[in-house]
Image (cartoon, rainbow, N blue to C red; front, top):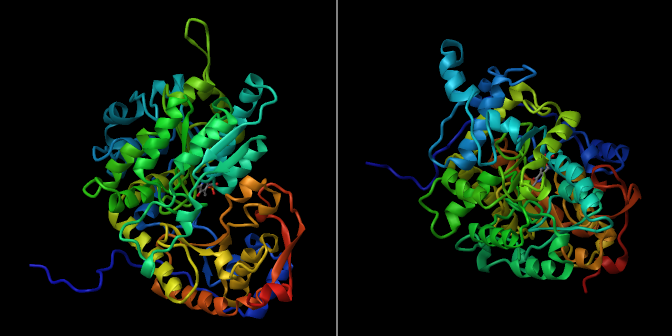
Length: 550
Ligand SMILES: *Cc1c(COP(=O)(O)O)cnc(C)c1O
């Protein structure tokens, strides 16, 4: 016998508390001026709610803090290396048939039965997926631990840039995606290539009657027609990689359907192009597939992940997002897959002359640390390992995604234009609509909106539109691919309903007062790569025409 209520039973509770200071708007304004209105430079200790990024900001669970004590800081082949690599195999490749090797450490088998450790962990040879093991990882390295996502990107592009330049001198390469993250764009541009973002803009900003779709329409999908057109127009030989970001962070954290990944994978492979997943929010995307895509309702997140990963040749991931951990990243490619074949060098008899894995490993060792830890500490590796398993818990993803939807619906009801439905890790304000399409793209009003949230209410968001995505520096076709938004990223397990209600009230008030929000000009660093992290800004009054109703 169940006794149902129309409110939900809680799924977690707060275990440690951090108190906050009381800060005035005047104090925040002083700090804004002193930090050249760069929102990344604003002191976090003066904020009430920090929605700048969900990256590395998770409140870790008791299980994660506990596992940190198991951390092994050995320089070579620390225990965490083995359990972390096996955790990736578990959650990405094994579906419901998982081994949970970390339990060998948690239960003390590592001290009591070294034979078992050798047979089940230390000396196990595995090959064929993203995570070679034992002797195969030495023969054909394909898994590279790094401190965070952008290190995986830099590692990849640092190594393939000279290879491509040698093979095709003078060529400019294009790398399409459903939408690249800002650091991915930055890394691609720094290698002299052109990033393209092929999402559906119309679908993204479409809002259904009453604000709710029956099922999430997967607004993060790549537009397949645009991809085919692009391949035709620039030529297949000029497209060394095709990306898909799951969930699509730059496109408002919107999920990508399995059908879309399957289709893009087929196109990429038809042309022999490696398909790369930018997989920071892989589990969250699997949750959306389970809830909204036909045929997946009865599958676990792990089973869905297994299918999703099977379509890709490379995974580049920030493992600081959602509930992973405070630090971590990975670059991995499929053993003997398209990436390995395209970027390794072979002798005439088909034997390997230069294995791309060894080139990546040299770079990893020079820049981050040896392959056993790649710039992560032993205790961070353990926290990440536990976080990987927690990511695939349905209850956790459900609570998180619904918290975002609560915020999005609250803002929508209060009249603030947001993208609906919410994605999984944040809520995105539609800047052009917020200002009634009155502000010019080079007035950076979205960034100004974001700064006013800090100034007036002590809430930090992040602009991911005209300023960050460098509208003023783009070609006309790239300009059309910018979506001008401000993101409220929600840290995992940190904020309560009270925080959400405070954000809703603040944004609703600022929306009413939107004509008092200044425009911004860039006073330093306009053309610096990834300028939003370090450029300086200054407010100025918008013109009277911009404020008058048309
Ligand atoms: C955060 C993020 C990155 C960059 O990762 P960092 O860990 O911040 O370096 C890359 N891609 C996506 C989709 C991200 O969300």
